[in-house]
Length: 152
Ligand code: SF4
Image (cartoon, rainbow, N blue to C red; front, side):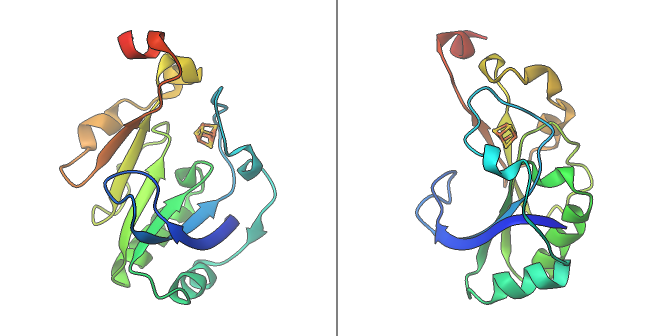
């Protein structure tokens, strides 16, 4: 799979904010949000096997892992990676744009669903059925660009 970076930091979003976390940032995204702050993930990166990703995650000795991007579910191997991380006992967060069906995701993982408001320019790309799949362990994120997004 194509990986932009794997690093250890402090989680800055969601109800896990403030906790140490390993971030697995995968390469590529089919969307182009107007306010995207991660365009550097659209290309480049390095090819790693799932075992190599697990080795790098393990080296940090941190129980919380976020799989993000880009759009992590854009790569089909991501579903297997998430299952392997769960099997290894990690608490796994998957931050996804909402544009790709989350149904195949291992339900032990927590979905952080980025609901695209109109100001993103990508609202029509939402896979709205993903909202129906959210459970109490998941979270939704709304990036608000302007007042029009609030009243949409
Ligand atoms: S989904 Fe995320 S990575 Fe992709 S364009 Fe939007 S903000 Fe950027």
